[in-house]
Picture (cartoon, rainbow, N blue to C red):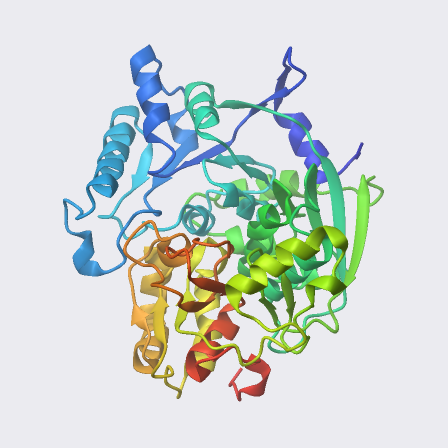
Length: 472
């Protein structure tokens, strides 16, 4: 087993007890709540007369079901089910004293965008949420993972969760990302190399020169997709990039308290002589913009690489590849460049932050969306939206022909009105591309970076963004 890693240190400091079933009972520093996975747990607590003992360690927002058109947010919501979930969350947070960022708050947005930007997520924490992309918060050097509905109940009732400790795999990425290559490309390459099940039983520790050079928002995108590679959690050791991001944020320690806390944060980083259960080395120097050709994030290639023929893949992957290629309609042996797209979607907990929209805006400025493409820009939070509007970035999107929406999960999983129709093909900055994910069983989703989404929107087909002249 691993020793002296950040994961070991944080786990040991939050372990409350050894449970009879062999699991550990962990204290949870931050529990994030949204409207979809919380109504039943709150109801169970109410039925049993159990109060929430640590409301200050629980924070809620509404994201999955919210309409992103301004007129669609008038109450009651047109979707009765969505209105019911939102009403329940309003009642539950009000009765328990839990902070809630609802539709009337400028800070409402996607859980995994809101918590980092408010400084709620900090190094050394344990963070959970009833959502698999909770791994996002590992970018701060926290241990963050998704939990099920019954565990949401347990955390609300006790601020603890029963959990199995995983092995730790160090993913060392040497070299540097080139122009037009972003953290989304890096994590898609990692998943393509290790497989969508490669991380089962592991927590991923990302490190090396290429990871060190990433901004905090880029690091959040990498850790976000750990679960897509099978790892329940992924993290990056905290450093000066982490501390500078946190400094001055609303819920981060202030003044001398920040410096005191920083000393603790530095102490929980993996030691130089830490021992890992596995170490994998990758090189970022020759990495291309990555796009998916199939129906999982591991079925991905560089933009100039040919789509693989199923018979050229390992035997265990061949049938899945045939089914996926039959669905997406790609041609083995040809690159993904030139694959037509009908929809361009920019947003989500993976790539819905301000820097993601700035990268895309640099591509869009002075250009227009292809007439055959429907283009949506959905900021990850109200704060991201207002920031980009103040900077003039929103105007670039509008002038290019994008619909500029309100914050929410939107077409990532189509739990609101934002969805694909029929067999539309979508260039998407989201994190999953399984059949039906974006609301149509016949829809096709191609995962890529925000800059690549912008290039596809302009050209009407999957395009190497490096071929477009872009002002840095």
